Length: 303
Ligand code: MLT
Image (cartoon, protein in one colour):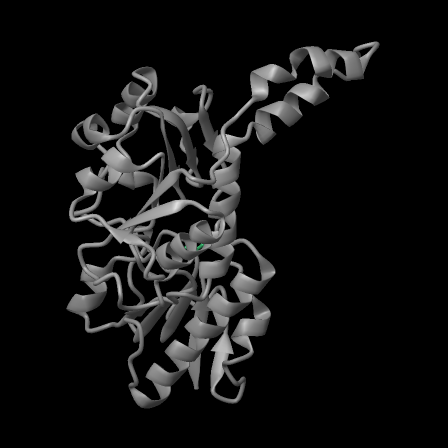
């Protein structure tokens, strides 16, 4: 019998993949053999003595002390692709919202609630919320894993031109990327040609502050930047400077920090990328199966 500790609210349907005859699920277990988690920061805790495997119900693993786990021979699993559709849908919403002034326009209409003639006020004031169409514009996709590829293919369907950059993959490989996506040789090339840029790479020591002063200096003026990957990929001081200089017309991110609040042309959502019932279930199920197969048979997938 193995004990699995869940460190976040993990979908019960997914956990159903761990048969109760072999696995006890206990969110309070002090010394579990397995851990399944979502966004809990595992750097804050000592690794339990009995720990044999960790599974993240999500793609990113930057909240897990991989080095410490490796030193002890503990594999860390993730669930690539299991939430890709959910994130893609949010990115598409972000793409549209970065162009069309839906959020501030709707807030402005609400602010007219005490106005005597709302229709007249709307007709007089709506011009301030004009925004460009995305069709015919260029989207640069940084990172062509499960999510980046889905976003790139969907943007083609919206009649955008799409450029991809991924130093680790050939564009024809993994996840069925459309042949209509052009390839950029460098990040600088991608950002200098893109009207919209979306980031889909993991956060680690090599990618932290990918968007820094130098990359912003190479970016096309008036670009809209979407970050539904990780907040640390963008240097916020450099971002503020790029917004002031008009290099970045809008920044949309799913990773709130205090320094981003109250800045004009920045939209922050509360880490909603994978927050759909479908994705939560898919991720929990994949994480549970990975851990189950490892504890049962030593099989390793996605670690
Ligand atoms: C991911 O890394 O895939 C997401 O952060 C998952 C989540 O929102 O929990």
